[in-house]
Length: 488
Ligand code: NAD
Image 1 (spheres, rainbow, N blue to C red):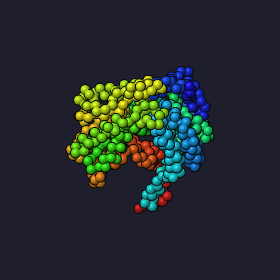
Image 2: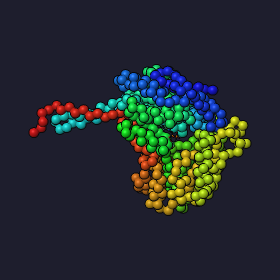
Image 3: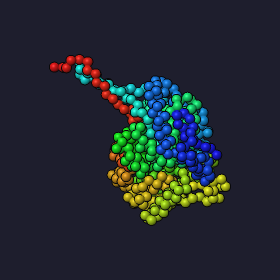
Image 4: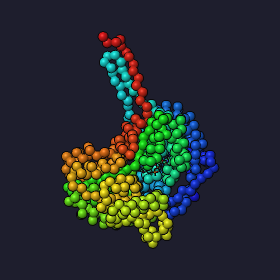
C-alpha cells in the first residue's frame, strides 16, 4: 500500500501527530494508501518553509520560473499513465477520462502559466506633462491553496501553476479523499529541481489542515475550490484577517434547450453535461429546460440514452460511469432520489445502485449508482435548488424565453449555463441575462484557459484563469513619479 507523506521544505516528512488514515478506493471499497492526518503543526512547518523560500523565489527571473514550470508540465506528460491510474483509483472515475482529459489539463495549466508570465506586463499612466504612474504587480507571499476531490490534479494545478508563476510560494492542501496525484506532483517538482520550500503540500482533513491554513497569519492569500458551506466558513475566518480570497464553489447549472437547436448534438452533449464524471463536476448541467414543442421527444431520447450508459469498473475501457467518491456521498445522492419522489417527481430511469452481478467481483462493494433522470418537479423544489453533485438530472418544459430565464436564474447558485439555439439574437439576449460566470452557447465545457472563470451568488466570489489568476496572485502597487514642475 502506498504511503503518502507531507512535502515540506523539499523533504518528505511524517505528520506531527504520528497519525495516518486510510485512503479508500471507492470502486472496490478497499484501502489503497495511507494518508497523513496532518494538523496545525504541519501547516506551521510548511508555512515557515514557504516564507523562507519566498524572498529568493519571488526574485527569480520569470524566464527561470517559466523553465521550471514547463519542466513540470513535461514530466506530467511523461508520467501520464501513472497519474491517470492514480486519479482513477482515488476518485472512482473512468481511467480513460483521467487519461484523456484531466491529466493533460494539469500539464496544460503549467504550460499556460509558464508562458503567460513571460508575456505579462503592467500598466503606465501619464498625468499630463507632470508625472508618470506605473503599476508594479508583486507576488503576495505564501499562498494557501485548497482543492476538492472531483477533478483532483486538474483543479489543484489550476491554482498551483499561477501562484508559482507569479513568484508566490505555496502551501497546498489537496482533498483528503484524493491525495495521491498531489503527492506524485511533489515527486515531479523534486525531480525538476524546484527549490525547497517553494511548493509544500500538507495532507489531512479540512477541519484540521484546511482550517489551520486559512487561519494562518503568515498566509495572506487563500484560493479555495469546494463546497458552498465550507466556502462560507472560510470567508468568515479570512475576512477579519483581511486575506485576499477566491472562492470557487458549488453549481446547479441550467442547460437550456430551444426547439430550433440541432437536437442530435443537444442530446449527445447534454448526456455528457449531465453525467460526465458521474455528475461530479461543478459545471454539470443538472437542470435541463426544454422548449415545450421539443420536450417529449427529448425526454424519451435522453432517457433511452441514459439507460444505455455503462456503469462499472473504472478501469474497464468500455465503462461510461465509474464509482461515486464514497459510500457516504452515494447515500447523500440517494437521499435526493427519495426526496425527488416525495416532491412529486417521476424517476424515469436509474437512481439505484447496479446489482453486484453487473459490477463483478472486483467492484461489487463499490459506491456505484445508475444515472437518474427525473421529471415533473417544480422549479423551486429542493431537488431543483440544492446541489446534488451526482448522476441526477431533472428535465422541465418551458414555453417562452422570459419563462426559461426566470427558471434558470431561480437557483441560488450561479456558476455556468448552457444554451442551445440556432437563433443568434436569442443566444446573445439570453446569455446576457443569465446570472452566472460562464455561458456556453451550443456547447458545454469548452474551456479556453485565458478566459475568466468563476461564479456569482452561492457559486463564489472572484475569478480564476488567464490574467484574472495573474492579478489575483499579485498585488498592484502604483508608483507615481513627478518629473516636471506643476502646470499652471
Ligand atoms: P469541500 O468543501 O468539502 O472540500 C474542499 C477542500 O476544502 C478539501 O480539501 C477539504 O479538505 C477542505 N476543507 C473542508 N473543510 C474545511 C474547512 N473548514 N476549512 C478549510 N478547508 C476545508 O468540497 P468537496 O466535497 O471536496 O468538493 C465538492 C464541492 O466542490 C462541490 O460543491 C463542487 O461544486 C465544488 N466544486 C466547485 C468548483 C468550481 O470551480 N466552482 C470546481 C470543483 C468542485
